[in-house]
Length: 328
Length: 306
Image 1: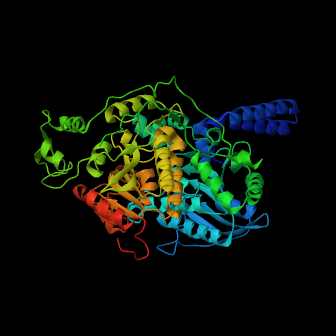
Image 2: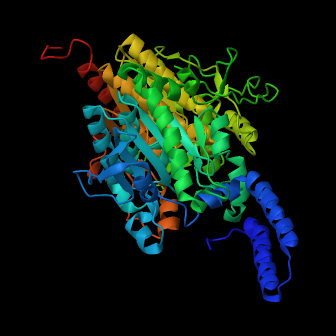
Image 3: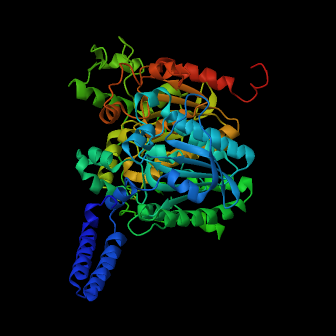
C-alpha cells in the first residue's frame, strides 16, 4: 500500500475492518454483506469529507508524496515519441531538468520539465529535483530552438527550489533563472506551464512565466518553502503547517489570485492513486489551451503573455503621499 | 472565450485604508546617519567600521560617501542618500510614489511590519524610482531601500520597476537600477514571486528597444532579485565587497552543511566567476556611470564621434 498520511488513517482503519469482516464472513459462512455495505458507504463518505476538505499542509504532503507521479511517469502517457535532448552546451547536463521534442495530440512541441527522483538513489542523481544553472541554461537553449522552429512550449514544474550550493553560486544561479524569465517573455510561440507537484520559489518560476499556468489540484506553488517561512516568522520549523496556510499557495489560492488559469483534477486522494486518470485529465486540459493559443498570432501571443505578467500583484494607488520627492 | 484565460478573479482585501493614510516622518540624510551611528556609539559623533574596527568621525565618512576612510568598507546607505551622491542637483523627478502596499494575503504581522518599515525608512515602499540626470545626461533610475524590509520585492516594488522601465522606453532613456534586496517578499507570497517575471519581461522590452540597462549590485543582493532584474544588466556593476548571490550563506550552510570558502559571494568572487563586469567604489560611481551613459547616448552608434 502507498505511504499513508496521518489524516488518511481513519479511512485505512475502516478499510482494514471491512477486510476483516469479509474474511470472517467467508470463514464462518455467515452473511455480513449488509454490514460490509454500510461500512463501505461510510468509507466513501469519509473519503469525500477528508479529501474534499484538505488543508494546505495536507496538500503539501500529497504534492511531495514519494509516489507522486513525476514527469517521466506522465511523458509516455501524454506524448508520442518524447525525444530527450540533453545538455546546456556550456557546462554539463543537469538531470533534474528533462527537455526534448515530442508529439502532443499530433502537434510537435518542445517539452521542458523538472524531475524529482522516486527513491534516494534517483534523487541523488536528480539532486532532489533542484536544478543547477546548467539546468536552466539547457531550458533556455531548448526553448530558443522551439522559438526558432515555431514549436509550442510545454513546461512541467516540480521542484523544491533551485539548487542552493556553492557550485550553483559560482555558476550564477540567479543569472541563469533571470535569463529563463527574460527568454520566456520574448517568445512568439504558445507557452503553457503546468505545476504537477511542488512549485518551489524562483527555481520553479523559471519555467512558469508562460501564457497559461495550469496546476494539478493538489499541487502548490510558493515564494518560499513553508518550513523556511516558519523558521523566519516564528523561528520554528515545526510550524510549517501554519506557514502553509499563511502563504496562500495552494492551487485553489493561485486560481483566486489570478496567477493560475485552471486547475487539473486529480483522482481522490491524489495523483498517485491513478496515474492514467491524472495523465488523461492533464492531456485534455493542456490540449484545450493549446488549441486556443494556436489560434492567436505570434505577436498577440507575446503581448498577451506580457499583459498577463504585467497585471499580477495588488497595490493601492493614491495620490496623497509623496514623501521622497525633491530630495536632491 | 479565449479572453477569459487572461481575466483574473479579483481578490483584494483592503483594510480600512490604514496604509494609505499613514504619513511617516521624513528622514533626512543626516538623521539617517545619526540613527545608524547611534546603534554603534552613543554620541552619534563617531562610528566604528565593522570591517577594520577603526573608530571614525561620522562627519568624515559622511563626506566620503559613507565609505570607511581607513579600509574603504562601504557602509550601507539609504536610497535617498545614494541618490544625493549620484545625480545632478535638483534633477530628480520621482515617479509612482503614490503606489502603496496591499496586504492582499492578510499575512500574519505584515501590516505591522510595513508600518515599522515606513517609519524606519521614511519611504512608502522599498524602492525609489524616477528620472534624473548625471552630468546632464538624462536617465531613469531605481534604487532599492535596504531599511524597508530589506529591500524585498513585493507587488509595489515590482510594479514601480516595471513602470519605470516602460516609461524609459517611451522617453527613450537608459535605465540604471541599484539593487539591495533580500529577494522576493514572503508576505505577498506568489504575487511577489511573479514580480520577478514582471520586471524581467519589462527589461526584455527595454532590450528590444535597444536601450541601455546598467545593473548596480550593492550590499546585499540575494534571492529573487538576483534571479531577476538585478542579473539582466547589459553592464553589471557592483560596489566593492558587496555580498551578492542567489541563496544566502546561512541557508547554504544549513541545508547543504557546506562551509562556504572565505570571500564567497562577494563582489570580487562574482567577478572572478564571470558574473560582474566592473567593481566600482561608491566615490567613483557617478563618474563611471556618466561615462557609460555618455557612450550609449543616441548618436554614439555606428562609429559616430561624440
